[in-house]
Image (cartoon, rainbow, N blue to C red; front, side):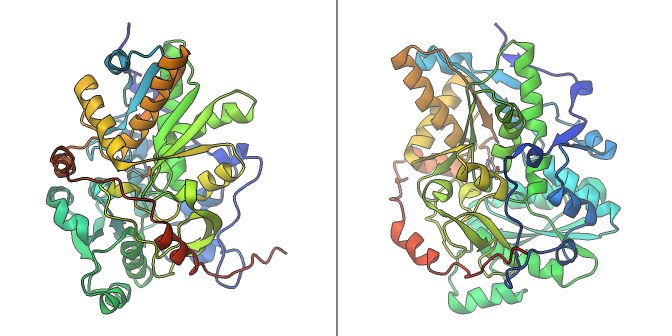
Length: 453
Ligand SMILES: *Cc1c(COP(=O)(O)O)cnc(C)c1O
């Protein structure tokens, strides 16, 4: 019985898969406050043309530049594992597979897009990239990628994480990045927040405002986003493409796929290449797993909203909890975003992908069981997918159904051990679904109508 299913370097995907080609309806376009679709020109202040083209492309396959593949080869193809020992621990007839994206230098799936984004910015003559980071996973990934292509990287790190995760900051600095605790007093957005709340611990939305503001105000500087946007999900599809080939090697195909969902990038990355089969009539369930404390897909509404807290970005049609919603301080920092990818949102709205919310304690319990059976200590974000797969495997144990389950191990938790400590000390709670805070934020949704001409 195989445990690790490995592809050769020469089997690494040569093209990204663009799900838009197979969606029954494309997602609604980004809008300006006037209700008109935002054209490529408006995005050109902060993104290179190649990425703007990818953002809008309807082409099914988009080729991966050789320079990008050269760097991805440092850790790709990533291994697919059969979780024999977890299956035994659960006494389940289900087959559980996981794709291990924790093998990248930064420890998560995020470098898959960071490398591509740094490459296209370098090609466009850009010298500096700004970005935000929550738990530090994305900041590390962009710092690594910027270093590979000789770009200066400036990271606005959510203040609470800046203090809670000092080693993520050191890691970014090791890869040459400049890191600031957000809200800062070096941008108008940061100063505005600090005036309202001098003790603000920051949020992803606020940090995005700061990074976008800096990028928009300088010719030599662009902005890079680690999730949500179509081109980011596109770059992550190498995960699902590889997983499909690896499952073929052992003659298997998943009944269900689970991935943690913050902005939707690793979920889209593993699920979309299988969506192509679903669109062609094959039965498969694609499940995005989120925290009950930031339940965007399961409790949000599908509406136009800003991508950031201040309202600097174009309006995106997505499931949202309101752009000024600040979730409770849960430990899965990468899942604290108020919105979601437009692609994932549209597919969820049409019932083509599913969503499930899992409470914090169940996710840590799943993470510990996984670590004790499979060995890898998972990132708190990844434990959401593990918990959902475990729920399903337990269900299979009851019904006797031998389902094939696949989940994405989006990252390892080596920099998240303080969260595990708090779990073991009994200090973590299941935050109640913050209904009032969500209702309050939803009152502040921008009132725009899409001028469909
Ligand atoms: C950022 C992150 C996530 C969530 O982001 P998505 O864009 O939804 O993938 C999940 N897992 C890990 C390890 C992360 O770093």
